[in-house]
Length: 208
Image (tube, rainbow, N blue to C red; front, side):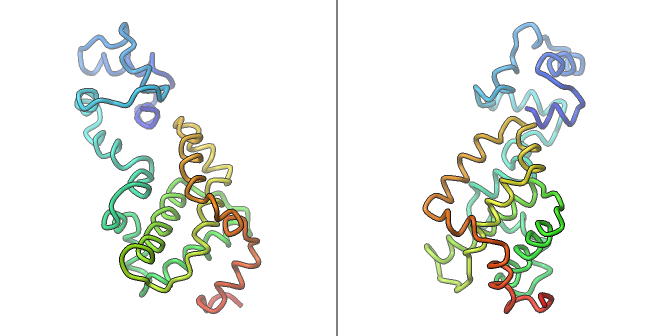
């Protein structure tokens, strides 16, 4: 709801209901129909999603995929992760190189104090799941996935990512969920940057 409100340029449930009613001829403002969903107290029903699709035809996709495909990265089946990583899969010859290049990009951003985005977090989560679930459940791929723990933690700790998630009212839930994923691997999640540069040096020829 917060994402949709931002898209149409309103700031709160009252303004959203007025905008929705003006476009649809309904009267949802007086009933407070959208307030509990804005506050995260009640999930949107299929009927509500159908109503919202009158003002945004992509609302079902937005609801299912999450901001920057974050819900898909967290909960979709493994085959659903390809679309999140489609650019990287086309760019790099192997999954091992893809993982190393992505982590290298995050380390560069960290070194130069560049802000990250929710899209970085979604890709970090997708790569983490892809590597670790393949190794554990399907076929060992022999890829160093240690850096993916740090990548997720780095994205969650980035002030720009945290602010973007908070503006959508989902930071606490996302942080709690992904912190559970990192439980028991706190040492890997907090590995110093220099150690990860050293680990990547043999895989990335641009690291001098």
